[in-house]
Image 1: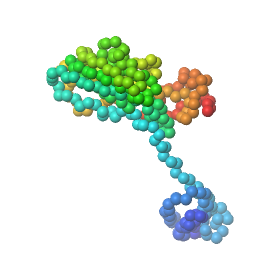
Image 2: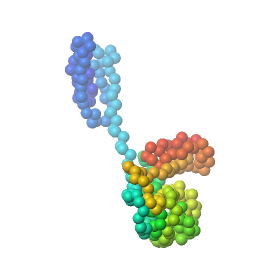
Image 3: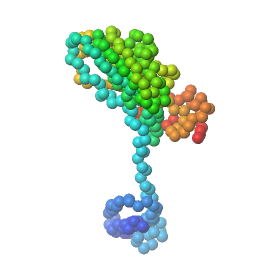
Image 4: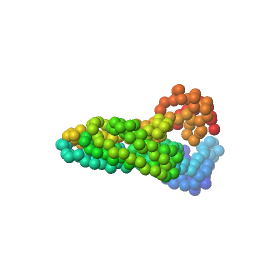
Length: 267
Ligand SMILES: [Cu+2]
């Protein structure tokens, strides 16, 4: 028995396949949306059941990037100095606090509060004995005051006491790095946890006097999480937040963040 394949509306017809076990193929570009009937055009075959439908849908548009990429590049580490003691230096560290709409996941943005527009903020690298002049600028247009508390600083609030900076202002202080170590820094403006959770954290490395041993590569990685109480694009109600907060697991800020099942529709 011979057969063929016709797709109606797309102007496609295969050659007839005659021999037992024979095959043929057709190549076409699906450039027309719609539902198209296909069938065998050998008389009587369509009526006998050799038919079906092919649906061609428009490709789903790639999700538009709506927010800024706030992810810090893990290779953004200040170049290491050769091991061995060197005379003390003075560093000037400028931190600008920027509140911006960043991409949280596909189709979802979040207003991050950042140091220099990235989360985590810039990696700061100094050496024991160095002097560090810190300038904190709060970008005009910020909604909040911001500050910086460097855990390498033993002064009041790690600097936070003198850097509570209103929008559009700049404040600063100078400290001497006397304790080698790898320290966190963060915004310490009340509510402090709110500022940290929104992205205001980073690290400062105070190398020992003699420097650190040489390594092949250095990376800068900190983990942050955004907890959701409702699926993407939905506003959480008070009840859904309280219900899911006890059972929710953390979702990262990476582009692989997944929507959480919500206990109820909350639009
Ligand atoms: Cu802040």
